[in-house]
Image (cartoon, rainbow, N blue to C red; front, side):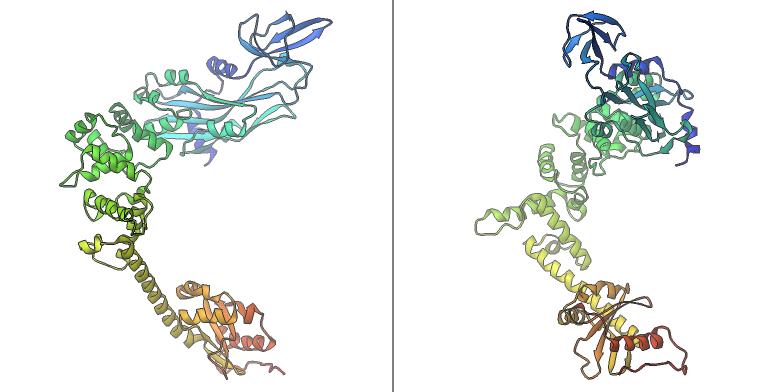
Length: 531
């Protein structure tokens, strides 16, 4: 999006880094004691406390305690190659908005410490904003720009402050940044900064401490959209519903995120909520909640314990298949039917057709779709719950295929009649006409050893048109096949995909002039008769 829109959000940020941000960044970078010798005496310089001192012989790459500041540091000999000694960090730091007391902001900051320079004592961290976030109730936005460190010029490069681009899709760069900077990169976010930023704002009630989100940016994005729902469900013990939403896991449509009361959010009543909370069983998964909602419609309901067993079985089923369980019958009746169909294979004399209960449900889904295509009466118990699901499904597959072929054949017939009137032509002992049927198209491909048989659906839909060229003396014997796209000949192929002969070329020239370019009646066409 444009940088003009970004400028509306940049006012929430101070351009200068606060002392707290600088302090947090400094703690992320590793500290060293650089050593060198003057005669027999070894000296050291600590990057943590900026002190220089005599040492009693520190060893390169050893981890020691600085004698001045008592910090744990790594010993680095200043005389040993430092050509790749560039430390990088990316961290997220939260602040209050500079203009809106109800909003909070976060900065994704990229930092570099370059110790490849000769004077290691002069090295200071270089920081630059890479991503910015603004969160307020009802709205959240992410701003980003391209940044990089030039190792040759030893400079940080980025688009200008006014060149941030905005996005309403919020994501954290902590994980991806760490993946691309495994050898020399550190990523983190400041929990203390969140505590200070949310204080006195609506976000202090968000329960953000309950979630392990990468930098918490996706969490605050979610809370900005559904503050009441996130707060209430967390406090009621339904954390897994929020976690599923944050991680992109299936939520099964179990939550009404815009609900104004907890009962509308969970789509249950007060008695249901009390029952669930007092059950002593983990009932906060999206799948369990969805099954509980479906179970409420049954006269013979599952108990919570029974429903947990159903949940275990359906954990690996595609979320879109779950509604089938109660679309035409009750949850208990459909689930019992699926179990019975799966368990048929327990008999050693019966072949097992389904390798799991989940697989049984998928096959049942496909069977029901076939029934709808065939306009079968799913109100009938015999149709809805066939005695042998596998056999019934094989039958519907065959019927659907026949029905599809019937539609295809009908389209071929209609196209044959239409195209014949416009394009059928005879000249010089050759005939061209449209293909009549699917079978004829397949036989054409078999006889001439080319792939025209795969063009059935394209011809039937009108995407292209397939024509057959025959000798007038043998009109049923395949000779050449032509593909027409609009008014343009795409290809003409004979036996084994061979190209056209001069005879065919001359025939097609006359055909296109007469039938495609539609010469005016009575206008003579110059014809070259092959020798």
